[in-house]
Each structure stands twice: as structure tokens, then as C-alpha cells.
Amino acid sequence: MACEGIDYFPLRCVLDEKFELLEAEYGIKGFAVVVKLFQRIYREHGYYCEWNDDIALLFARQCCLSDNGVNGNSAVLGAAGKPTAPGKAKNLIDCIVAASIRRGIFDRRLYEDCSILTSRGIQRNFLNIVRNRKRVEVKREYLLLSDAEIKGNVVITSSSYVRKDDSDVSSKQSKVNESKEKNNNTMCKAEAFALFERLWALYPCKKGKGKVADTQKMKLLKVGYEEMARAVERYKKYVDGIDYLHYQNGSTFFNSGYVDYLDGNYSPDKKPLRQQGQFHQFMQQDYNFEQLEKEILSN
Image (cartoon, rainbow, N blue to C red; front, side, top):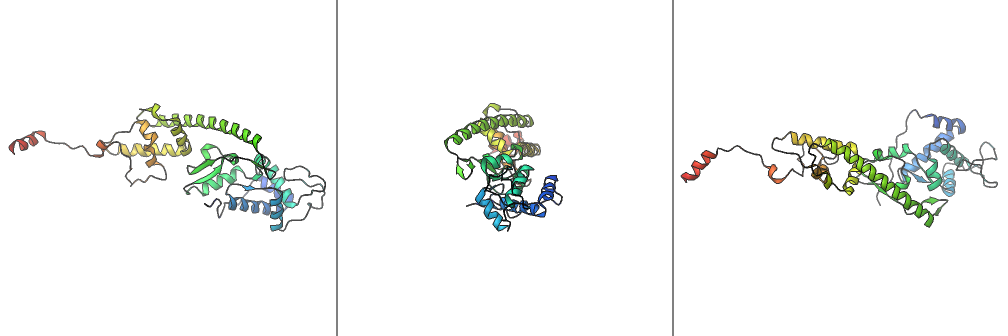
């Protein structure tokens, strides 16, 4: 099984007000617990970790914070930030997690819907650290980032269920997911078409636009505008530097020709694998046809 998590993560020397408020509320223990949760997230899946009552109980024991109640108060908040039912007092870990969710350190919606802890910052850090991996799988249901923030090596998958209260939400949730998937596909197509129009405007040889299929435009969307724009500029520089070469039709470039000019494949000293046609691979030469004719007749 491929490694999902990472061995390290960045932690700023100066944190924002959310962490200061958490530490003001729970002291250094609040800060320490959040850092331990970050370690769990980055170590396990890299961009999220599952969180439920059993996991919280074991986590509290590991952190030696399994005492019930906080500062002797009997009205203790549960993991969703609401007072717990009588007889179900939560430990300090639950209260710190609840405060972290309340203050936006972790995303409330994904905790309530999917029973996971994550955030935009966590996901952004993870994808930046694993940018050199060949393939990184992330679940669409857990993503908080925009398409522009997603790296080219990221493969988005979809779960058949959503975790909630340690059970699989079956048929009703499946229908909801299916509806969301359709909406996401529609939005992705619109973004892919808009991206292609921007890239087409950059390319010098505007021929064959209709030959670029919708599925190919979706592939270009996964690469992203910035990397594709760099690929176009690299190709233009390559062609402009050799007199006998001509630009490929736009359809040829955006269907396959761009691949050699992507960040992971391009090298200034490396000759691209895909040329502009067999004829153009040979340099044109000036011949003295009159002299050639004399030599042929003299033989």
C-alpha cells in the first residue's frame, strides 16, 4: 500500500489569533493537543484524520489527559460544541477539539458530515509537501481547496459512503452524493471550458479548435492554467528558436503536444519527443540545381 501520510509538517513561529484564543482558554495544554492532532492528521492520511468518541478516548489516554471535566466544571461541551447529555461528560480532549472547531482551526462541516478533522491550511500544506510524488489520491468529499490550488499529481477519488457516528449512511446518502457528483461534474466542465478558452487565446496557431474533445479539456483542467501557460511559452520559445519549424495546429498541441513541455517532463537541454511532423525534422538546405544537372548529365 502506498504511503499516504508524511514525516514532517510546517509550523509557523507566529500563529494567528485562533491559536492564541485557544491557548488563552485552555493554557499550553490546548496548544499541545492541537499540535498532537496535526501530527496525527499528517502522519495518517496527510490531509485529514478520522475522529469519533473511541478515537478521542484513546487519544486522550495517549496524551495522559483522560480526566473527566475541565477545571471542575460539570457542564462540558461535546465534540460539536454543544453541552453533552447528563452522564456523558467529555474529557479535556473533546473540549479542546470542540473549541478548535468553533474557532475555525478545523472545518466544522466536514467534522459534522464526515467525522474527520481537517482544514484548508492542512490540505494546502500537505499537497505542497507531496508535490514531487507521482500520484496523490484525495477524496472529493473531503476537499476544501479550489481547483487552482490542486497540484497536477493529484487524483481525485469519490467514496461510496460518508462516515457519520461510526456508521455508513446508505441509500439516502448515496443519492445525495450522486446529486452532488452531478453538480460537481457540471461545475468542473464549465471550469474546463473556461480554462481552455484562456489557453487557446495564448496559443499562436489557432487551427482545429473543434477537434479538442471535452474529455481532453477536463485533462487540461487537472494540469491547471499556470502549468499549461508555461508549457505554451516553452513550446513557443522552442519553435521560434529554430527557423525551419512551424507551430503545430492548436488541436494537435492541446491534445498531445503539450505533454513534453509540462513541468515534470520539460528540460531546456532535452529535445522534445513530439516534433511538428516528419518533414520538419530535417533542416532545409540550399542546393545548386544547375550544378547538379551538369553532374548528372556528365555521368
